[in-house]
Length: 97
Image (cartoon, rainbow, N blue to C red; front, side, top):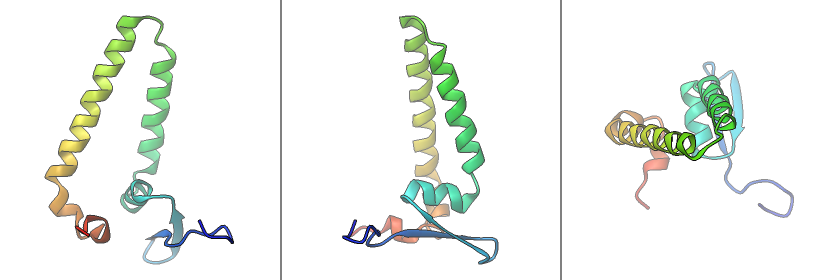
């Protein structure tokens, strides 16, 4: 951050055919906003928080850990396979520099 509290190079998402412009925190927020997935991400986060609140023994914790690792592996493999499709949307984020 600079002295006046503004980011040096903030990211913005333009939606609704240029009608809405919104500043986002990082590339993940940018992707979620650009693809319209905020509601799904919020639902998933709340679901995981609820399930974790129900963990009361080691077996349940181990199950949740395995389940979350599987979800993360699936998302990573999906992003890897779909990289060519999303490069046009997020071009600067894929630069090799």
